[in-house]
Length: 73
Image (cartoon, rainbow, N blue to C red; front, top):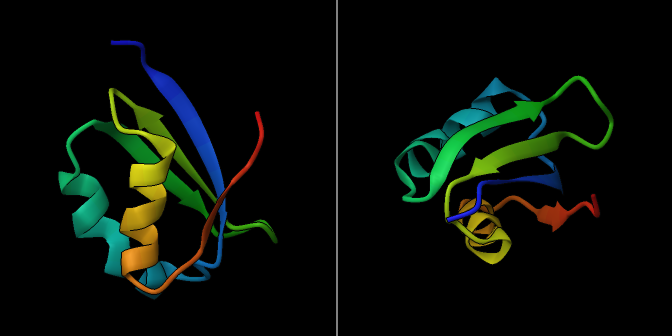
């Protein structure tokens, strides 16, 4: 399976916001590594995929009440 990197524009503004999605992203099957850059205006979530789809990542973030809009590579 091909590994890919996805980027999402989010509204995860602080470490408290990140903590709300952390367990779900950490435990999601198909995610190798993830990170949120809260120091940029777009609050970019970067996900290194090992099988998970962009829709699945977005659904995880949205289920916690945050937005996740895919950024075109």
